[in-house]
Amino acid sequence: KAGVTQTPRYLIKTRGQQVTLSCSPISGHRSVSWYQQTPGQGLQFLFEYFSETQRNKGNFPGRFSGRQFSNSRSEMNVSTLELGDSALYLCASSGVLDQETQYFGPGTRLLVL
Amino acid sequence: AQSVTQLDSQVPVFEEAPVELRCNYSSSVSVYLFWYVQYPNQGLQLLLKYLSGSTLVKGINGFEAEFNKSQTSFHLRKPSVHISDTAEYFCAVSMVMNRDDKIIFGKGTRLHILP
Image (cartoon, rainbow over the protein chains, first blue to last red):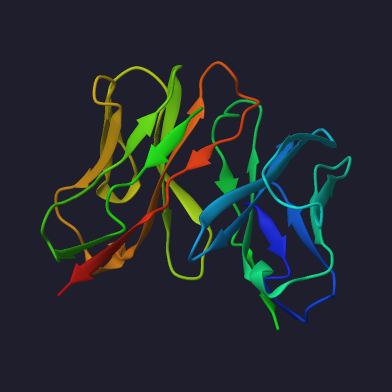
């Protein structure tokens, strides 16, 4: 069974631009969560989607948004990028049978110049 | 509210020596506990998890962890480390009764293996 995939793996943007990151969960998984990882703040929860609905949300500004499609693939969008948005963005999925366990993708490394 | 504390941000240890990475949690309800490992430039990989039953949990790569409810701890151990264990290790907790709630991660412990 293929793991969680994320595209693109690396991205360079400039301040003020917007970016969209994509995540394809493990086949059969319906829950997708997004995390931001930085050296200073560690792993911070962004939001979780389940069956196309946002189920949980972390403490991030409205510039960070997401959505989930009917095939469980998810996208995360960041508008009006700031230098501090430079980070590794991780996506994780979980299944019905072991919904307490999150399986992570390799991440998208975003650099904002 | 739940919280996770990893007491050591960095742990240096000689190759083939034993290691313990400490994790304490705070929660008013029963929890699930996890350890993840992150190798350089990669995502997080599940090492092991405690859901219920035996308090000693064995994971991949020779790691094990022991759930201690009275001390609210879930320390990770390996009897003999290898250079390939160089990575960052994250402890995480989620609530048993509310699977809709998010998982909380510790700040991570960077394990340095010395030759």
